[in-house]
Length: 252
Image (tube, rainbow, N blue to C red; front, side, top):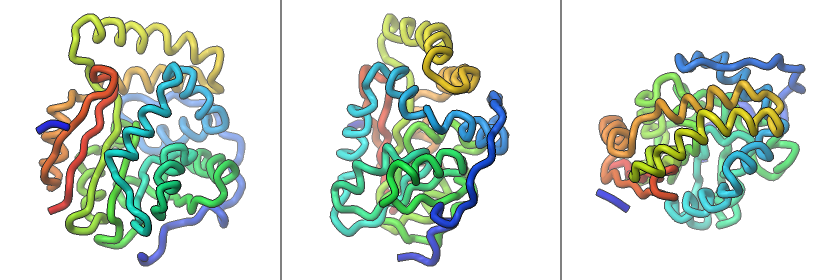
């Protein structure tokens, strides 16, 4: 590395079935309704498509996330932008109570079907449906770049984490070596859309996702944004040369 609560929101066990969602492609202005609809449209095959497009590396990233959070038995952890709960499950296996939260109803319903023991909760990163200082830690994996106001979401995460609690952000980032950066850029903008046509239910959604990765700030800039949102002790670790970066911080 470098240098319970009042209501857990709307539980999916009481949610109504999702209607068929038309395919959409969100734009980089990240209008919340468009982003949520886009994820609704890819929910059923999202986990499979991610595994293929990530070349089988998602388990490595999830393991690194769990190690960075260091969950302890009995802790209550918020997993924001949890989607179908693939990032929540490994944390729960360590004995923590994990609340997977997302604003895509489609993703949450698929997650509830696949992982029924997890308390899936509908919530917007800008207005989390939780009280102040109720979580021991919060995580967000590959979701912060899809929020319309990342700084606002970081402040909202700080609100719901107790003093001394932890934040871990796992996100695609900027490779440090020029050759890796070039190859990665070609993969993002060329290969991913092509592969998505074969494995994804809405290939256009992955064009947006590739563009959002390319437009995302580098490790140091994100660290400054986390610190600017009121978190302390911000540090980061690169995975695969910076293709993915883990940022970790504490609430003072």
